[in-house]
Length: 110
Image 1 (cartoon, helix red, strand yellow):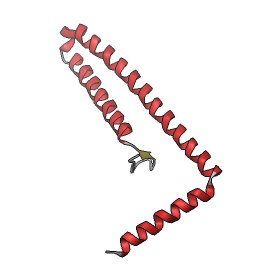
Image 2 (spheres, helix red, strand yellow; image 1 turned 135 degrees about the vertical axis):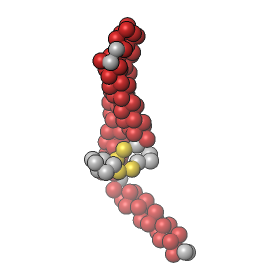
Image 3 (tube, one colour; image 1 turned 90 degrees about the vertical axis):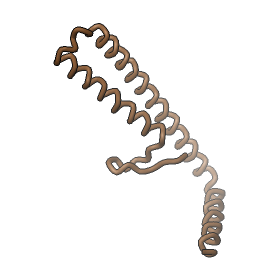
Image 4 (cartoon, one colour; image 1 turned 90 degrees about the horizontal axis):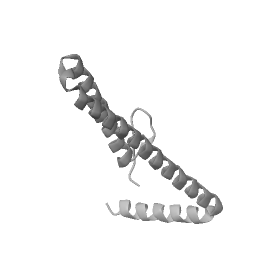
């Protein structure tokens, strides 16, 4: 899994979490624009605005569900990895040593 650290939280964030965050920001921006337009005379089309607000609400619920699903799967994978490492510490140490040797050999060639 490809992760990077965020500057604000220091927690690893994958591509799907960043995408969901970006979509939430867009939804909030659309919501703000709709409220701004309603205040400036856009209320003639309030029926359309109400439908759009309902759809935005549904989209936010689906995004929250997706965020929870991704989070639950990541926690499950982390728990499985932890159980495996606790059950097989010498295998993990051997793999880590082998990876270290390979990296050392590759860096030594430069």
